[in-house]
Length: 267
Image: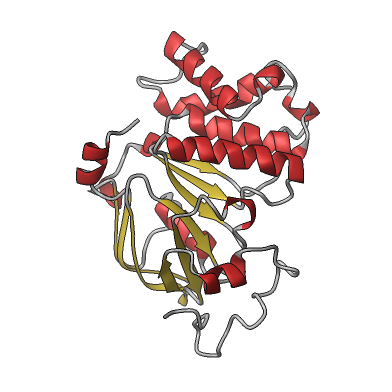
């Protein structure tokens, strides 16, 4: 775990200044200012089309900024090479697709980002220890040798989290971690995230609503029409908009837009 002193002196895991992204001349993000410091627990909120996915893709290096600057751990994104420091859990609900792989094999694939000098067909002692620890963290030790296809959707989501953790990232980005997950697995996921927060892991959770992790979140960033509409602690107004399930996940929350491109919650 990173010490408090080193965390206090470390550069931000993510720093964006005046960040913009456009596709085919159409603006998706505009003027984004953002710092995510080590130890932050951040929820990135907003309705569909607000720019959440594009912002995450920019942080992950999948799309370039068309204006502004991005630094990762103090290094300009164009020169950043240590991608193992960023773990990512995608939005898709399940893994497997008929592939005959065990939970351990799926989680072990997360160690590839830590390999040096090419790929090897075996796991070293450090790899095996990291894989076992990641599986234990998400509560799947008893399922370690089970086929991934035999797990429930919630268990498969936990396996995806373990795969990301096996790479020992400094920043963990999770896209809609509770989407399509039943209540029992939501509770287990919440306990898993609580343990990661206690260990000092930096979390960025992309979601439509805070739901079961509301008590863990230290900071909320709300995007609307590609701009940061709010950045701060989870206020009552933010919780009112995003604290519970959205009855229509394809529509903005009721009353969220004041017609000016903001959510009407600042101040």
